[in-house]
Amino acid sequence: MAALILVSVVVAAGPVALVFGATGKAGREVVESLLGQGFDVVAAVRNSTKASEVFASRMGWPSKGNGVLDVRSGVDVTDSSTLTPALFEDVKHVSRRRHRSA
Image (spheres, rainbow, N blue to C red):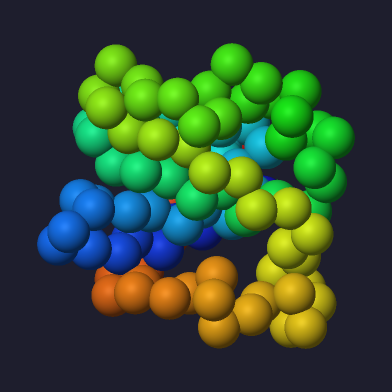
């Protein structure tokens, strides 16, 4: 599955990235990379329990790159009712990365 990254540049708060599929293998790597680059990351996930397991030590705390992780659960890209306007607030750029299976 591809990790979809929506990057928002918010002048007052610094760069913010919205990542779908954040708890998957590629998504985790994307989240870690963005945090390390100083982005604040909003991880849009379906399952809050899995997100808590995957990101337990990261949520709400600055990373080495000073990025902060915010997890938003109940988001499913296949269900448009979960893709609320608030989730996309201030998003200015869309980027997509694909994970390739071995």
